[in-house]
Structures are given as C-alpha cells and as structure tokens.
Length: 312
Image 1 (tube, rainbow, N blue to C red):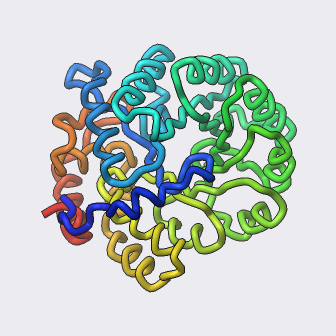
Image 2 (cartoon, rainbow, N blue to C red; image 1 turned 60 degrees about the vertical axis):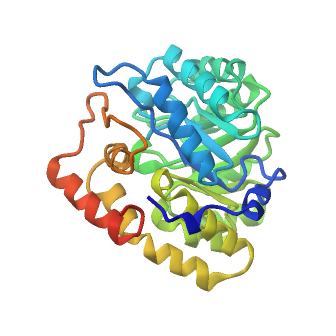
C-alpha cells in the first residue's frame, strides 16, 4: 500500500472542484463478486470508500471495468444505491448506461437517475457499428431522456466505431452532453474539440493521463487509480499548479503499474488481482467470459506494483 506520507492533505481534499461536472479524479470502479459469482455489495462499498479516501471526486459504476456486460439491470441499480449509501452525497456517481440498443440505454439512464446517479457514462454503441448520423441520434436521444449530465465514452478499440471530431463538436451543442471520457488517444482531435466546444475531457487511457491533462483535459477516468488514487491525485494537482516536473516524475514512476494492469491481460482481471494484493478485496472473482489472473500474471503484477511503489 502507499506510504502514509502520500495521504491527500486537507488542501487536496479542498481542491476537489465543484465547478467541474465530475471533479478531476474519477475511477472506473470494479464490480466485486463473491466466489459463487453473486454481486457483493458489501465489498463494493469497501472499494468505494477506499477510492474516496484516496482522493477521488467521482466514481464511475457499471462501466467496462465494472463488467457491465455481465450484470443485470437490477444489479446495476443495486450497485448505484449501495455505493451512494457508502460515499454520501459529496461524491459524484457516474453510471454507465451505454449499450448498442438506444431504447435499452434510455431505460438504463432513467433507472440510474431514479437510483441516485449524478451523471451518465454513455459508450459508443458497439458491434452494430452505426454511422455517425446514428451516433448523433443515439447520444441525443439518451441525453434527452433524463435531466442528468452525460459523459460520452469514445473507445473505438472496444466499440468498433469512433466518435469523429465533427460529431463531438455537433453533440456539444446539447445542454446535457457536457463531457467526454476519451480512450481513443487522438490528441490532435481532442485539441480540436477543446478549441471548438465547452466539453470537459477526462482521459480514459492511463498511459495518456499526463499528455491529456497537458493539452487541456480537466481530469482522468482511471483504472489504475484503484491502487494509485493518491498518486494520480498528486499528479493532477501538480498539473493544475503548473508543476510539470512533479507530474512527470509521478507519471514515470507509475509506468510499471500501468503496463502490468492494462497490457498483461484484460484490465478488470488485473485490477481485481491488484486490489486483492493490496488487501482491499478478499476475492478477485470475475464473471465469464473473464477469468481470474493466472499465478504467473499475479507474480508479474506483484513485481510491477512493488516497482511502482504501490505495495510493499
């Protein structure tokens, strides 16, 4: 675990911005399961508290890292309600509701709003590969369906379709489309969107966190922050303060953690194993088709997390 010296100061806590829709540091949270595969709400509350203690302003629930494709609509609602109970009203909850069916996405958005979510994460519809006109219609329909702010999730490596720069600029006209979780990695395209809209960008690819912040992203939506929230809080605060050298140092120290969690195998697999190593969760259970990390992968993970200074 991180050393006591890395605990966020009261100044860091006070720096959690209320002006930004989802603050600056948010984690795409896992969904814990018991060994029989059932939803473990007690463990979810412990993970949520762990993340808040590390400096998170917001938590993204029911996203890719939360294994949303394998959880039911009812389980998604239960998770939102349990985490809200655990973290209180001061921490934003962003609910992943995106599917490749607009009607189902709208239903999920309404359920998330009723359950107490503060915002919606809406991923690009996957597998059916809609054209850009279809994306505009989809995202607009979802944004029209509730009173919550929407964060569009642009991740073509998973969805098969990117949200093109021109489409993002057009969608920014909607009053409830306020942010983008960017896992596309097109820094030039992001710069163009930032120059032409008021959208808030959150980096959704941990290897590009510092680069994205440098060109104008307001924050990050991280996976590695499950075990590095304090470090990412310090990195973000350093960028905001104009202390690039400190931000670079933190970013470079975290390279082994980012590589081992995000490239050894699927991210949710490794981050659950990392949380188990850190003593945050008891079980690293996943739902098929995901499987637990192998002994070899856990060995790599242990070495790399120690190198990054995240466990002892």
